[in-house]
Length: 313
Length: 288
Image (cartoon, rainbow over all chains, first blue to last red):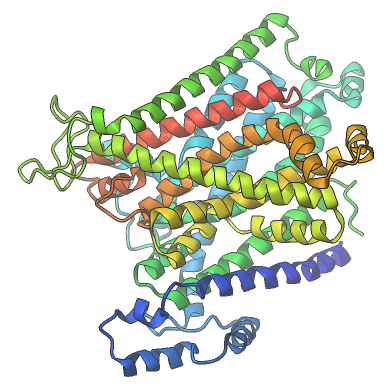
C-alpha cells in the first residue's frame, strides 16, 4: 500500500507540472500590456517600467517560467499586486473555511446520497426510486448560486432560521457551525444528485449478479445481502464520482462563498478578479491545481481500500 | 437487465409505466427547450418593454399587472430583460457546445483511429485538462481574455473540448477493430473518408446525448460567470447578470433574483430531461 501511495505521488508530478504550466501560460496571455491593464492607460512610462520590473516581466518568458516553478517548489506563491502581502499567508488564513465547507458538504452528499441510491435500486420503480430520480434531476440542474439564493430566500429571509449575512464572528464555535449549515447544505444537496445516480446504477448492476441470487437463496436477510454483498461491489464507481466531484465542488464552493458571504478561497478568487490582481489569481489557481491533483490521488488510494481486487502493486 | 429487474418488484406494468414516464420526460424536456428557444427568438416582439428602458419612478417595484416580474434597481422591466437574456444564454450555450463538439470529436476520432504516439499525447493532455475544474478554467480564461460574447464562447468551448475528445476517442478506438472498417481499408478508402463517413456516424448517438447535457452545462457556466461579473458587459441583459443584480438587492426585492433564477432552472431541467431521455432511448444498458 505504501509503495502504491508513493508511486501514485510520483505519477502526480508530471500532471502537476503540466497544470502549473497551463496556469503560467494562461495568466500571460492577457491581451495587451499587463501594466496598462493594471495601472490604466494614464500611467506614466516610469510607473509602468517599475511595475514591469516588480512583476519580473522585464525578463525573458523562459526565465519567468523558471522563476515561477522555482518559487512554487519552495512553497512561495509571490506577493499580491494589490496589497503586496505574501499570497501564501492570505491563502492559509482562509483555507480552513473552504476546507470545512468542502468537508461538511462531502459528508452531507454521501450520507444522504448513498442510502438514497441504495434504496432507489432496492425498491426499483417504487416511490424512493421516483423521488431519487426527481431529486437528482433537480440537483444536476441547479447552478450553485441559484440554489444558494433560493435557500437564502427561504431559510433566512422568510423563516429567519439563519442569519442572512453570516456573522463576522466565526471564533465562537456555535456561530461558526450555524454559519456553516446553509452553505454546506447547498453544496451537499447538489452533490447528492451525482452520488445517488451512480450508487443506484452500481447497485442495480450488483444486485443482478449471480452471487446475490446465491446469497438470497441461502436465506440471508435482505439487509445483509444489500449492504454487505451488493453495496461493497457498487462502491468503486461511487468513489470515482465522489473523487471527480471534488473538482466540481471546488468550483461550486466559489459560488457558495459569494452567496453566503463566507471567507474562503472562492471569495479570494473574486477579490483577485475585481482588483485585476493577476499574481493573486495565479497563486489561487496554483492552490486549486494542487487541491485537484491531491483529490485525485486520494481517490486512487481509496480504490485500494474499497476493493481488494484493485491491484496496489 | 432481466436479472437486475428481479431485484425489485418484477411486474411488467411497472417497467412499462417507467418507460412511458421516461419518454414523457423526453417529450416534456424537448417542449420546454423548444419553447425557450422560441421565446428567445421572438423576444424583440413579445417583450412588453425595451429591456434597457429605465423608469426612475419605478425602481425595484414588486410584480404587478404592468410589470409581471417587477422592475430592477434602474426601473427596467425584469420580464423583458429575462426574455432578452435568454438570447445571450441560449446563444452562448449552443455555439460553445457546437464548437466543443466539432473540435473535440475531430481530435478524439483522429487520436482513437491512429492510436500510437498521437493517441498517447492527446489522452495525456485530455486527462490533465479534465483534472482542472470546468468552472475555474472558464473563469480563468474569461478573466485573462476579457469579458465579451466571443471570449465567453471560446472559454466555454475550451472547457467542453476535453470531454468530447475522450468520448469520440473511445468510440473510434472500439470502432477501429470492427470488420467493416477493415473492409473499408481493403476497398482502399482514405483515412479521412473512413473517419468522417464510417466512424463519426456510429458515435453520433452518444454525441447527441452528450451535447444536450453539455449545453446545459455551458448555460450553467455562462450564467455562473455572469453572476460573478464575467460575462457580456452591462447593460446587456444576461440571466446570470440579472440574478446578480437581484442578489445585491435581495433584502429589498427578492423577486428580482427569483425570476431569472427560475428561467435558468427551467432550461437546465429541460435540457437534462432531453439528455436523460435520449440516453435511455439510444442506450438500452443505461436504462436500468
